[in-house]
Image (tube, rainbow, N blue to C red):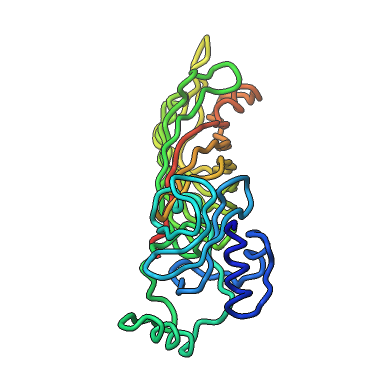
Length: 291
């Protein structure tokens, strides 16, 4: 018996109800709930292979679930915990087939004397990244040399990101503080941006203050720009994140554009000005729920 077969038979024999036969079908059939709302009888879903829901279990309380395992050190119908490293990493959400109310709580209490089940909430499960709520995080990146002459390569600078925002099941929005050292221009910058997107791709934009006098070192001379308040806009793309505890770790790449103002006496030059304002970087970040 596979995992969805166990759930299928449980509903068929226990309630006389026919439910979808696959894990993905059961996931679509149930009502989405937050991990913190899990109660005995709810279903927990995992992505163990591929990119869609491929495993399902029945939550039994206290962070445990029962399921039919066909691979791993233990097989058959077994109990596991959501905070075990493998199941925590592959966990993708929870679903509810029947409403949890006073009648359901009383029925569960009668079946397990001495155990109290609240009407809602009260789960000992930690927050999962898939849950909606506020989040925060930090990241650090290596900025690469420019694309035209005048750039220092391969290290253009180093940047960091401090993030605080709110996420829904699919999208998230945040404010970001992005202090960075721009070696190529000889300045320190402090962008403050707003971002919106998914776990895979986000766009960002906001004001940026440049400390010092930006200058691009050319073969024959330095090319000067004006500092102070400027604007920055860009896009961040990540590989699918790896869940660790109630957060995710991901490798990301970023393209950003901050057009410097030419200093008086300087003529525009596309190659030089694009090198000065365009930045490509790669780095690591960790984001986690705190509510």
